Image 1 (cartoon, rainbow, N blue to C red):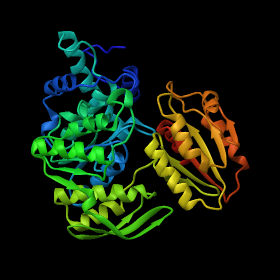
Image 2: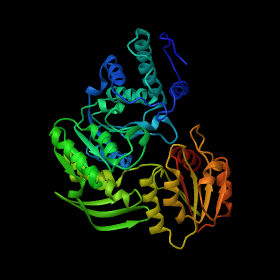
Image 3: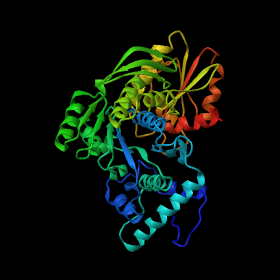
Image 4: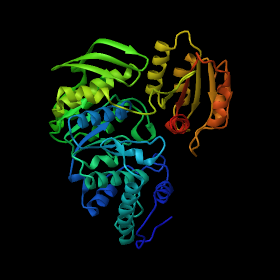
Length: 431
C-alpha cells in the first residue's frame, strides 16, 4: 500500500492503517542502523536537537523509563518518552510531558516521515519502506524536536546494538535486568543477548546498570571498560526499612544519599526497578526531592495494574519467563487464602511451556484465550500444552470474561500473558 508524494493530508486512522500495513514490528523486524540513519539525515537529523536517556534490558525497562521521565519532569525538565509496545493506541508510544501526542500530531509526523521514506525508495537510496518500528522511531524523534523537548527517555525496542533507537548519542545509558527473550533475534545464550543489550553503550557516556546475573554483569562491565564508560551500579543503592504492600512499596533508598521512596507500582520487582531509576537519576544530577516526587507520581499501565474490585482484577503483561516469575512471586505473597483466577493469552513465539510452569501452579482457575492478533496462539493449542486441574477455553477475551461470573467478590483475577490481551482488557475496564 503506497501513498503518492503529492499526498498532503492524512487522518490518524489512515496513518495507523499504513503503519500496520508495514507488518508486525517483531515479525518483520530488520535490525540495523543504515535505513533509520539515512531516513533521519533526510529529515534534518531531529535526534541531534535534544538530550536522551537510552534504556535497554529484558525486563523492567518500561517501568524504569517511566520513573526516569517522571523524575525529570518533577525537576522541571520538558520531557519526551518513547516506549513500546502500546496497549490501546499507538499514540501512547510517543509522549510529551507525560501526555500521549495527539492524533493530529501523530498523523502529521507519520506523513512527514512517510513522504521522505517514499522519496528515498523512489531514488533507489532505500530498497523498501522503513519498518513499522523504524518509522515510528523517526516519528517520535521528529515530534520531540518539533515540541521543544529538552530530554527524551528512549526505550529500546529489540536488543540494543542494532535497534533503531541506537542512532542517538545519549547523556546516559541504562541497562535493566537481562534475561531470555526474543532468542531468535538476539541469540540463544545470556552472553549473546547481553552483548546486544550492551550495544547501546557509547564511548565515554555514563551507564547505569541494574543488578545482573554474573555472566551478564561481566560482559557489560568489560564493554563499559573498553569504551571508557563510567559505571553506576544500582547495587550501590539499598532498600532499607522496606515495606511491600499489595499496590506498591515504601523504603529508604540508601546510597550516596538517603531518599524516602514511595513507589506506587506493585510487585517486589518494582523495588529493584526503582533503585535502578534512582541510580540513573542521581547520575543525571536530578535533585533528591524531584527523584522522590517522580517515583511517587509514576504511572505505568498494564503492569500489575488494578482495574476493578469485587473481585479484584489486575492486569499484568507477564510475557516472558522473568515477568512470569515476578507475577508468581506476587501471587505467593499477596493471594494467600484467596481463590486465584487467571485469564491468559499469548503469542506463538513465546516460551509458553516455561511460562506456564512458573505461573499456573499458583492459579486455582485458568481460562485460556487469545488476543485479537494474527500472531496469537490459539487457546485450543495452548490447552494441549497445559496440565492444570481447572482449565477452560474461550475464543476471545469477551467470552473469557463471561466465564468469570463464577468468581466471588473475595476472589482475585489476573489477566495476563500478551500485552495485546492486556490492552484489550484495559479498553474494557478503564474508561
